[in-house]
Image (tube, rainbow, N blue to C red; front, side, top):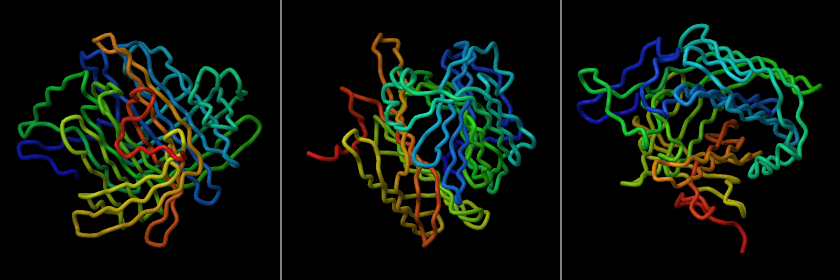
Length: 349
């Protein structure tokens, strides 16, 4: 489990797989995220539902990376009345057995993007590209321990959070294997592969973190990794993550990611070096196969609108002679239209 300063501990209970009573903060968010990639067909996707009951809506995202670089995508903020279910806008997550088996279903419309980079202008992308009916049914089974939980004081008391500067009160992740069917228009794909899921709850402001690099990946049932580097306004970046090896997690204590960039500041590839608590070292190479840029805009209490960009890259990884697949998710607050991450470079003259 992640290391914590003295006087704190992690709390996690099977009941945390289900929705919690919302806190008073307007920005309270409870979300579940899944990704899954078929290593034989080289297709897959990610799915997220985030309840914001105090704001009266959920956030849902469905993103499927199809053959040939095409992406099927949707985002919506459907109305919700409470936080009783992870179900909104045609997307539903059911807990069959906590930490072991979850089921996801989606029925609705998806936008077909031959050029996923068009989502940099979502209004134009939705106006200019076709939409099709879709049905997705997936089962996820844990292949690892659960990593994370809620950080509390040693006596079990919760932490006091500044809602405007909070990204989550609690967060946990787990590597999974999954299977199911994707029906996208008149095409049907049987999917079987590996991925990662996470769960979080508490106040969330997308602009609370200036930048991060999050790289979950799977090389099979017995070997997987998640690398996390999170920028901070008041200190050096926070490094985290873990390596799954033969059913056990080994905490990442050092990590560096060197990325390649295109003219828009989107990642096209990366090289990572990590060291773990056990003394193991790994070198990882990643090649982005398909990328879709997303954004979140919010006007703060000071009346200033701030924009966060999240680039979601379906990525091929290589490590220790093995081939795997996963995501490179890069988040940056934008200043003057450009990501603030100190590693971002503009390719070309």
